Length: 305
Image (cartoon, rainbow, N blue to C red; front, top):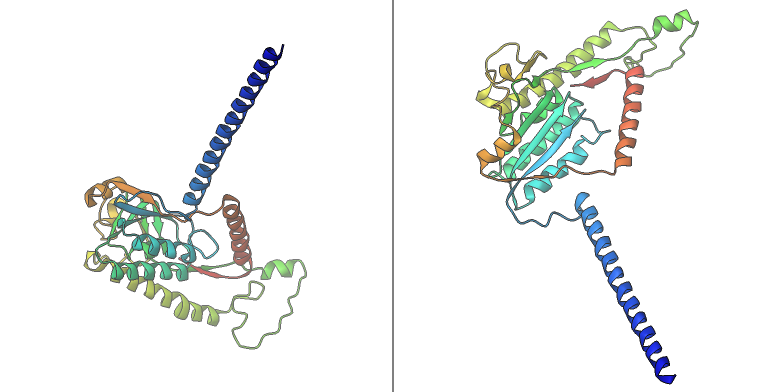
């Protein structure tokens, strides 16, 4: 009887040991899984760079309107460009652009960033690849690159500046609404949509805001593209061309895809260095930007490219 009890106790002890071993193994698996997920998360948000010593081309993508209120702001993209250029594994930079334009200030800051990076890292080429569209402020930025490539049907150009808004004077009259506004300064309310148009103020805006900004835009394009530009007189009048027409005008250099660009540069790996933002934060920013744009368009004239 005692012998049977001893056998039973030994079997129970062995079972307990197996359970403990199973729990230890399961805990180890959980720990490895959590560590892997954490590593992927930190890598995806840029806290930890990819564990890959290979030479690569760093690509940074710009999709959509260029504004301080979107992901395509200089505040977000300029540090990403500098970070990619500083990385010793990065041999060249590829900017993939697809944008209808945006604000002059953001375009100028990114143009200056590209020029500075080119001066600091002269051995690293900065090449632009255009997808569907690169107009106005987008082309402002692209013109700073060493080369610009697109497809034969990409839309390119629109080298001009615009300012627009709405007027509600007649609507207010129809509804018996009267505006009462006090200002100090003759032109303080020159953008007020509830006041009648002022030809003198509009002439000032055209001469000192639009024309000045347009001239800076033209200077940046000429500085970036140099002798590649043709003598076409309509080049800077806000027109837009398809890629097939843009190449002989000197607006682009060729029709290579991102992979063809990498092959020509002799680098196999293309690594995405585009800043990543939390999905909720991204949607919140886009919603806020759309509200802000709607508000500005309804109340004020905004200068855009």
